[in-house]
Image (cartoon, rainbow, N blue to C red; front, side, top):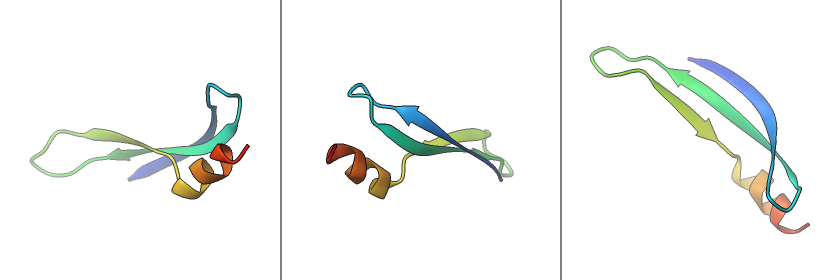
Length: 47
């Protein structure tokens, strides 16, 4: 697995950390998972 981390901006302008993970497994198509940590979402909602 390879992971990249970054920052996105929500429509209200809050910055939230995010990640993207490339997943390769045998006998299934490759996939790309995008994720937002729940703690980061909670902090952004309080702003």
